[in-house]
Length: 402
Image 1 (cartoon, rainbow, N blue to C red):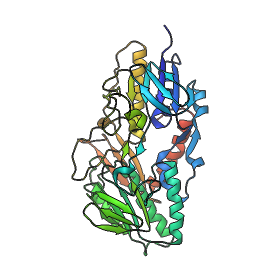
Image 2 (image 1 turned 90 degrees about the vertical axis):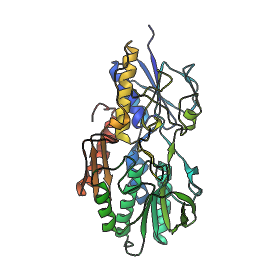
Image 3 (image 1 turned 180 degrees about the vertical axis):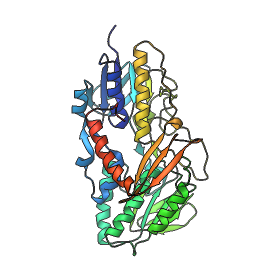
Image 4 (image 1 turned 60 degrees about the vertical axis):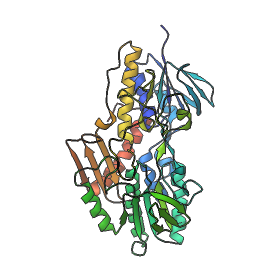
């Protein structure tokens, strides 16, 4: 019997974890190829620091080629241009790639079209990619020469509220360092129905804790609101209210990559792959999706739509589930690993400059038995340490470590 071929699209949190785990699960007796448009691993949680000059690209990235080579995984630097799940073939800028099993770990793209005025050439910054964060840093340096009020927010449909909160509190910290805290009005604008909802329904005492943080820092909050458009220096909300600014950072919603959404019957309306709790696609048993690329059902409705955050920890968990199930299929067994997204524990560290909050819960989505937010400077130190640990772990392919 010929060796099976596993193709992984994407080489970041989900792709790197899945590729190396599959190789380990089958003790090397499988051909694994990673196809990725980027040849770098990016530790996305640290993008919040890039605009303030606290991190550079070199600090939070590494080349993935050597890592895959060390673990006998083939790496192809190229962009997927088409997926044919019936023919089991992916077209790419580096040539066609055939597979027996496919893992889609292609991450997200920004949906800047949700409101006019967003985007690289728009009137507000974002920090969801390295290039976005670098541009946000250029804007920050211009702002320091000509300060004004600051608006930080997340649009309707956004899910990455953690990054918005982290950037908000880091902005407050940097304004204090620059001696601008008293002269700059800092406003947080969010689709969340209440502070600390985070796109996961909130946690016990979260609203009170975040309210205390905002009060201490003198930050105004505008909640449960949609945005209409962003002009130069002005954000207009759906109800007609306006906020003038000298600097704005707004988190948009995410959607799946176009190459995935263009494939037959794989995705939902947002371009995310519809999956079972085995992370197999709903239609094809040999196609898996993990991380942001996998669709998650929102278990509630809010007056202003909010998304669900798909962060690094659940992405790793999904990748391990998918890898074990692929290994089982290759061995001729039925996939036995199941883990619904909502049942994955919530583990997050929210940085606030020189402070922060550790967020822990037994489940990502309610109903939960346990959930806690632990504030204090130890959270900032923990995030610094975790960044160094995680980059080391992934660069060395130690994906079985916690």
